Length: 123
Image (cartoon, rainbow, N blue to C red; front, top):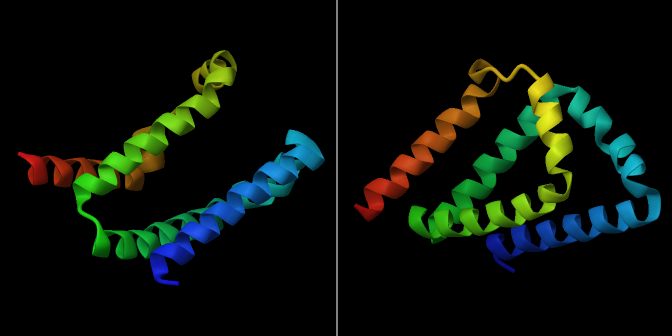
């Protein structure tokens, strides 16, 4: 198996694990399972950045920014479908949270660079 196949298999196993875990332990069980990671913001951010750098390196070796952007748009619609049943509660939660760009500056920079890269590739 090549690196992309390994990354895809890891994703598939994690997805199936999460779904099985939620089916067995319920959503409260899943929240209890992942809460320690979310409570330690620095560890979670390190894992997220390291994962993004590693997978991004291998994905962009094989695919163009436009191809990756198309796949990301597909995944974004799948994620949106997952959140739609909780729309009202999510809006209420977001209204309570003071969202400041300085809290997610790294994500903003990455998304702006990615969008600009796509646009430069197409236009």
